[in-house]
Image (spheres, helix red, strand yellow):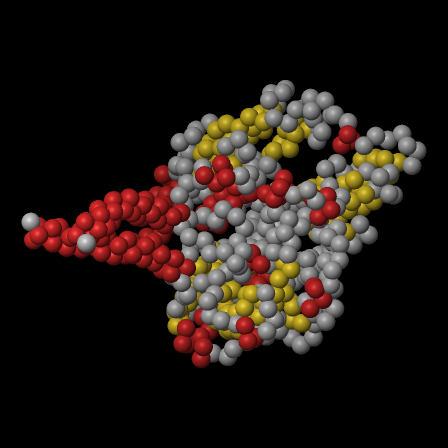
Length: 541
């Protein structure tokens, strides 16, 4: 009997130890993806049609290159002022080594965690960028500059090997965030923190013509007579990455002009200070508002001009406070879309009059096997062929259409034949040597004159960029948990990237939940085994 008790004790003891070892092993599995996915990059690949000599550089090779160190001022979404000190390799040195071409237009930075940032060659390497010590000066967030541009220091965009957030002391730098994209501000109002991409492991240089940001608009039509004191509010299609800059003195707005929308639109419903952050423009006299949309990864929008006549007699009525009656018409910002399968685009509908009492719309597709559309106008191409997207006013039955031409079989066969045909290869574009920045600081330099090719009126939207921006735009209008829960398990970013966050693919999160469930079941089982073992030991004693 004693032998049986001894055997039972040893069995339970071994089971207990084995169980706990298994638990620690599974916990280790749950933690490993954090390091596997978001760990430090150990090399950087530079590739794409925009470089003549694609290459891969190790960390040791990067450390052997000339190092650049500086302090960087940044603003994030809210806006909150932050500071970085960073040391690394100049981007222009890396791109020159890869042989960047004259026709290069876009530079895509990819992280080991799956997040991407795309910037134009112009805004990244041609526009001057600065560190603003005067950003520390406190100013009201009323669209004016929230700090002083004095003592601005021109800084280089770098791929940082070491950095420190929230500090201007180089002694605080470490390598936890390497490799990290670090850039300066073009103006003290520019929000750049979401562009500080951690764990960069690939840079792709593209020759695709950049898209152009949508033009901004006002809440009251131009050429309107309004009472003195009427407040003009500005808006654009996105209100997230892009911002509206404006002037009221007749001059052309630039990135150094007052900015209307500080924050991303998805946060507005959660903030009580929207009007203090995005202060409307009050009409006190005849007013001319010129505005432009500026943001990362695209060309600036066209400059839009709105004129308002101030009525001094007191007879004019604020049109925003007077219902405009039933809709009399509707229009779309695009009447034709050429998208690849999987490509997306959100159509913007405008109801006439602007203050119509019923703004409800109905969206439909003539062939959902080709293209679908949701209740916010987001079009997604799902198959080959052509479909017609129709938007209809709920009241009055006014319609507007957009023809979506996806690729068809004949186009694919023609493209294949052209690809397979032999012929002389086109001459290779000349290699662009990026000039080093000239001495001298000009913080108010106009950054809106683009040297990149203009976007054709009906251009093809790059699939990956369009998908990302469309999904981000869709989520941006509704930041609630329910909307987030309805997302497909794609590795798309839900909220605007901040340098203090490390996104993980949703699939990893699902796998981790399975591991956690297994651990809980084991704990439940072993708790009973442990109790029996303790009871057995007590009886033996």
